[in-house]
Length: 342
Ligand SMILES: O=C(O)CCC(=O)C(=O)O
Image (tube, rainbow, N blue to C red; front, side, top):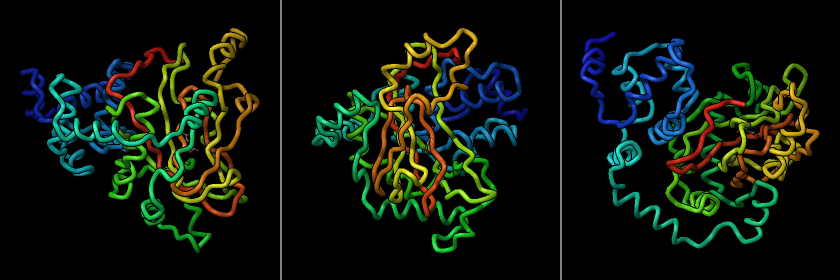
C-alpha cells in the first residue's frame, strides 16, 4: 500500500477534497477482495457519488477489479476519465455527506425546474399511476439525439449504411459501456427531462444518473438477442420502494425494433403475485412475459420512464435498424434501499 494511503488510514482523514470518494474506494476495495459482502448501507450514496462525478458504475467496477488501485491512483483515474469535479459538484457532495448548505447555483436550478410549466399532463400522470410508466415526447431535440447516436456509432466503429459493421463481437448483450461525452451530458442536463422526473418524484432536488447506452441489432443467424430479457434491478423484498428508471430513444424505435418491454401496472400486483408463488419458487426465474409484457416503442427523442417494480427488459430486434438508446434516470438524495436481496 502506498505511503499516502497508510497515512490516510492511520490518521483517519481522507486524502481528497471529494467527499465520499475515499470511503467508496475503501468499501469497494474490501468488497472486491472478499473482505466484505459487498452489500452496504451506502449503496445509494455510492451511486449518487459516481453519477455526479460522471463515472459509470460498470466502468468504475471494472477498473477497480482489474487494477486494484491504491486510493491516489483511483482518484487520478476518476479525474482523468470524467474530469476534475467542479466546485458545484464538490458542494453537492458536501451537502450529501456533511449536510453543508447547497450552493446557490444548484438551488437556482431546482427553483427554475420547480417553476417550469409541467411537461407531463394530467393524463400522463394518470397513466403513470395506473400503468407504472409514461412517455415524455420530444424530451430532447432531434439534433441532440442525432449527436448522441453518432457518438455511439463512432465508439463502436460502425456505420449506419454498412450493415456488416453493426455486428461487432465485443458485447455479451446490447449494453454499450459508454458514459463520457458532451452529447450524453447535454441530454442528462435537459430541463424538460428534469421537470418530468420532478413531477414524478414531487421534488426538483434530484441527481441525474451517469448511465450507459445500448445498441440492439436486428437478429440474424449467429446474432441472436442476448438480453437483458425481463428482470428487476431492485430487491423484491417488500415493499419495493418508489423509484424510477428511464430510457431515451435516440432513433425512431417501433415496437418490433427491440423496444423496451415491460409489464404495465405490475407495481400494483407485485406483492400479491409474490405471496401466491409456491414457497420454493424463485420469482426471477418465473415466466415474466406471461404476466402481460408489452413493447413500448417511441420516436427519436422520446423518454420512457418506468417504476422500478415493473419487470422490464429489451426484446429481440425484428426490425431493420439497430435500436440505439441512452439510459437516463434521476434520483433524490435519500432513497430507501433494502439491504436484503430477494
Ligand atoms: O434497454 C432496454 O430496453 C431495457 C433496459 C433495462 O433492462 C434496464 O435498464 O434495466
